[in-house]
View 1 (cartoon, rainbow, N blue to C red):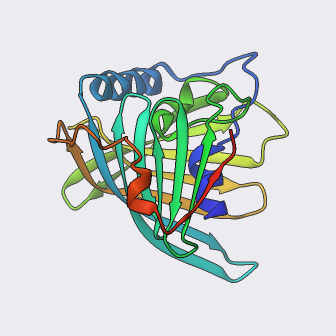
View 2 (view 1 turned 180 degrees about the vertical axis):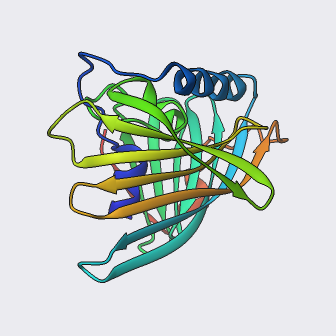
Length: 214
Protein backbone atom coordinates (compact mmCIF):
# COMPACT_ATOMS: atom_id res chain seq x y z
CA UNK A 1 0.00 0.00 0.00
CA UNK A 2 2.85 2.35 0.81
CA UNK A 3 4.48 1.80 -2.59
CA UNK A 4 1.19 2.37 -4.41
CA UNK A 5 0.44 5.50 -2.40
CA UNK A 6 3.91 6.79 -3.16
CA UNK A 7 3.39 6.14 -6.86
CA UNK A 8 -0.08 7.67 -7.08
CA UNK A 9 -0.13 10.34 -4.41
CA UNK A 10 3.49 11.45 -4.03
CA UNK A 11 5.04 11.64 -7.46
CA UNK A 12 7.87 14.08 -6.91
CA UNK A 13 7.20 17.31 -8.72
CA UNK A 14 10.32 19.46 -8.19
CA UNK A 15 10.54 23.17 -8.94
CA UNK A 16 10.11 24.39 -12.48
CA UNK A 17 12.93 26.63 -13.67
CA UNK A 18 14.32 26.17 -17.18
CA UNK A 19 12.08 24.09 -19.40
CA UNK A 20 12.83 21.89 -22.38
CA UNK A 21 9.53 20.67 -23.77
CA UNK A 22 8.87 19.12 -27.16
CA UNK A 23 6.01 21.07 -28.86
CA UNK A 24 4.54 17.86 -30.34
CA UNK A 25 4.51 16.21 -26.92
CA UNK A 26 2.99 19.36 -25.44
CA UNK A 27 0.21 19.27 -28.03
CA UNK A 28 -0.66 15.64 -27.31
CA UNK A 29 -0.62 16.22 -23.55
CA UNK A 30 -2.88 19.25 -23.95
CA UNK A 31 -5.28 17.20 -26.07
CA UNK A 32 -5.37 14.52 -23.38
CA UNK A 33 -6.02 17.09 -20.67
CA UNK A 34 -8.78 18.80 -22.68
CA UNK A 35 -10.46 15.44 -23.27
CA UNK A 36 -10.44 14.58 -19.58
CA UNK A 37 -11.95 17.96 -18.68
CA UNK A 38 -14.94 17.25 -20.92
CA UNK A 39 -16.17 14.44 -18.68
CA UNK A 40 -18.54 14.69 -15.72
CA UNK A 41 -16.86 11.69 -14.13
CA UNK A 42 -14.40 8.90 -14.86
CA UNK A 43 -14.22 5.32 -13.57
CA UNK A 44 -10.84 3.69 -14.13
CA UNK A 45 -9.97 0.04 -13.58
CA UNK A 46 -6.24 -0.52 -13.42
CA UNK A 47 -3.39 -2.93 -12.84
CA UNK A 48 -0.45 -1.81 -10.72
CA UNK A 49 2.90 -3.60 -10.93
CA UNK A 50 6.14 -3.03 -9.05
CA UNK A 51 9.41 -4.65 -10.14
CA UNK A 52 12.96 -4.50 -8.81
CA UNK A 53 15.18 -7.24 -10.24
CA UNK A 54 18.10 -6.49 -7.91
CA UNK A 55 15.90 -6.97 -4.85
CA UNK A 56 13.98 -9.84 -6.52
CA UNK A 57 10.67 -8.02 -5.95
CA UNK A 58 7.60 -8.41 -8.13
CA UNK A 59 4.18 -7.29 -6.99
CA UNK A 60 0.93 -7.14 -8.96
CA UNK A 61 -2.41 -5.84 -7.82
CA UNK A 62 -5.59 -4.45 -9.31
CA UNK A 63 -7.87 -1.66 -8.28
CA UNK A 64 -10.31 0.98 -9.42
CA UNK A 65 -10.88 4.67 -8.92
CA UNK A 66 -13.91 6.89 -9.47
CA UNK A 67 -13.14 10.56 -10.11
CA UNK A 68 -15.51 13.54 -10.01
CA UNK A 69 -13.54 16.76 -10.00
CA UNK A 70 -11.24 16.64 -6.98
CA UNK A 71 -13.39 14.02 -5.26
CA UNK A 72 -12.53 10.35 -5.59
CA UNK A 73 -13.09 6.83 -4.33
CA UNK A 74 -10.04 4.58 -4.62
CA UNK A 75 -10.19 0.81 -4.01
CA UNK A 76 -6.97 -1.18 -3.80
CA UNK A 77 -5.55 -4.01 -1.67
CA UNK A 78 -8.88 -4.33 0.13
CA UNK A 79 -8.71 -0.72 1.34
CA UNK A 80 -11.10 2.06 0.30
CA UNK A 81 -10.11 5.72 0.29
CA UNK A 82 -12.77 8.39 -0.09
CA UNK A 83 -12.02 12.08 -0.58
CA UNK A 84 -15.10 14.29 -0.35
CA UNK A 85 -13.37 17.59 -1.09
CA UNK A 86 -12.43 18.21 2.53
CA UNK A 87 -11.83 14.95 4.35
CA UNK A 88 -9.91 11.81 3.40
CA UNK A 89 -11.59 8.68 4.77
CA UNK A 90 -9.56 5.46 4.75
CA UNK A 91 -11.55 2.29 5.40
CA UNK A 92 -9.65 -0.92 6.25
CA UNK A 93 -11.95 -3.95 6.72
CA UNK A 94 -8.99 -6.16 7.67
CA UNK A 95 -8.13 -3.88 10.60
CA UNK A 96 -11.77 -2.91 11.21
CA UNK A 97 -10.60 0.68 11.32
CA UNK A 98 -11.62 3.95 9.69
CA UNK A 99 -9.19 6.87 9.62
CA UNK A 100 -10.51 10.37 8.93
CA UNK A 101 -8.11 13.21 8.18
CA UNK A 102 -7.69 16.32 6.12
CA UNK A 103 -5.98 15.78 2.78
CA UNK A 104 -3.39 18.45 2.17
CA UNK A 105 -3.85 19.04 -1.56
CA UNK A 106 -1.34 21.93 -1.52
CA UNK A 107 1.52 20.07 0.13
CA UNK A 108 4.73 20.44 -1.81
CA UNK A 109 5.73 17.45 -3.94
CA UNK A 110 2.30 15.85 -3.51
CA UNK A 111 -0.49 15.26 -5.99
CA UNK A 112 -3.88 13.70 -5.52
CA UNK A 113 -5.47 10.98 -7.65
CA UNK A 114 -7.53 13.67 -9.37
CA UNK A 115 -4.25 15.08 -10.69
CA UNK A 116 -3.02 11.72 -11.94
CA UNK A 117 -3.70 12.67 -15.56
CA UNK A 118 -2.24 16.19 -15.24
CA UNK A 119 0.80 15.65 -13.02
CA UNK A 120 3.13 16.46 -15.93
CA UNK A 121 2.16 20.15 -15.98
CA UNK A 122 4.88 21.10 -13.50
CA UNK A 123 8.33 19.77 -12.74
CA UNK A 124 9.05 17.83 -15.94
CA UNK A 125 10.65 18.29 -19.31
CA UNK A 126 9.27 15.96 -21.93
CA UNK A 127 9.62 14.73 -25.50
CA UNK A 128 8.04 12.21 -27.85
CA UNK A 129 9.26 8.64 -27.46
CA UNK A 130 8.32 5.39 -29.22
CA UNK A 131 4.96 4.39 -30.70
CA UNK A 132 3.62 0.90 -29.99
CA UNK A 133 0.71 -1.08 -31.39
CA UNK A 134 -1.15 -2.62 -28.45
CA UNK A 135 -3.95 -4.93 -29.59
CA UNK A 136 -4.81 -2.63 -32.45
CA UNK A 137 -4.43 0.56 -30.43
CA UNK A 138 -1.76 3.08 -31.39
CA UNK A 139 -0.01 4.09 -28.17
CA UNK A 140 2.28 7.11 -28.31
CA UNK A 141 4.75 7.32 -25.44
CA UNK A 142 6.01 10.58 -24.03
CA UNK A 143 9.18 10.54 -21.95
CA UNK A 144 9.17 12.87 -18.97
CA UNK A 145 12.37 13.78 -17.16
CA UNK A 146 12.21 15.49 -13.75
CA UNK A 147 13.67 18.98 -13.67
CA UNK A 148 14.76 18.42 -10.08
CA UNK A 149 18.17 16.75 -10.28
CA UNK A 150 17.62 15.26 -6.82
CA UNK A 151 14.38 13.55 -7.77
CA UNK A 152 13.88 9.92 -6.78
CA UNK A 153 12.45 9.42 -10.27
CA UNK A 154 14.82 8.76 -13.15
CA UNK A 155 12.13 9.20 -15.80
CA UNK A 156 8.48 8.51 -16.60
CA UNK A 157 6.95 7.07 -19.76
CA UNK A 158 3.35 8.11 -20.34
CA UNK A 159 1.48 6.06 -22.96
CA UNK A 160 -1.45 7.82 -24.65
CA UNK A 161 -3.97 6.28 -27.05
CA UNK A 162 -3.70 8.55 -30.09
CA UNK A 163 -7.32 7.88 -31.07
CA UNK A 164 -9.17 8.40 -27.76
CA UNK A 165 -6.51 10.67 -26.17
CA UNK A 166 -6.87 8.55 -23.00
CA UNK A 167 -3.93 7.39 -20.91
CA UNK A 168 -3.13 3.73 -21.52
CA UNK A 169 -0.32 3.33 -19.02
CA UNK A 170 2.28 5.12 -16.96
CA UNK A 171 5.73 3.65 -16.34
CA UNK A 172 7.96 5.15 -13.69
CA UNK A 173 11.66 4.24 -13.44
CA UNK A 174 13.12 5.11 -10.05
CA UNK A 175 16.68 6.17 -9.43
CA UNK A 176 17.06 2.94 -7.41
CA UNK A 177 16.10 0.81 -10.41
CA UNK A 178 12.53 0.14 -9.30
CA UNK A 179 10.00 0.04 -12.13
CA UNK A 180 6.37 0.79 -11.33
CA UNK A 181 3.69 0.45 -14.00
CA UNK A 182 0.09 1.58 -13.88
CA UNK A 183 -1.98 0.16 -16.75
CA UNK A 184 -5.56 1.32 -17.23
CA UNK A 185 -7.63 -1.68 -18.29
CA UNK A 186 -10.99 0.09 -18.45
CA UNK A 187 -11.68 3.80 -18.90
CA UNK A 188 -15.36 4.58 -18.40
CA UNK A 189 -16.85 8.06 -18.56
CA UNK A 190 -20.05 9.81 -17.47
CA UNK A 191 -21.31 6.87 -15.44
CA UNK A 192 -24.49 6.97 -13.32
CA UNK A 193 -23.17 7.48 -9.79
CA UNK A 194 -24.87 7.45 -6.42
CA UNK A 195 -25.42 10.89 -4.88
CA UNK A 196 -23.92 9.52 -1.65
CA UNK A 197 -20.80 8.05 -3.28
CA UNK A 198 -18.51 10.46 -1.43
CA UNK A 199 -20.50 10.49 1.81
CA UNK A 200 -19.16 8.52 4.74
CA UNK A 201 -21.92 6.84 6.77
CA UNK A 202 -20.44 6.07 10.19
CA UNK A 203 -23.49 3.96 11.07
CA UNK A 204 -22.32 1.31 8.60
CA UNK A 205 -19.07 0.95 10.54
CA UNK A 206 -20.36 0.87 14.11
CA UNK A 207 -18.09 -2.10 14.88
CA UNK A 208 -15.00 -0.34 13.53
CA UNK A 209 -12.53 1.82 15.41
CA UNK A 210 -12.99 5.38 14.14
CA UNK A 211 -9.70 7.27 14.22
CA UNK A 212 -10.50 10.94 13.65
CA UNK A 213 -7.20 12.78 13.25
CA UNK A 214 -8.70 16.25 12.80
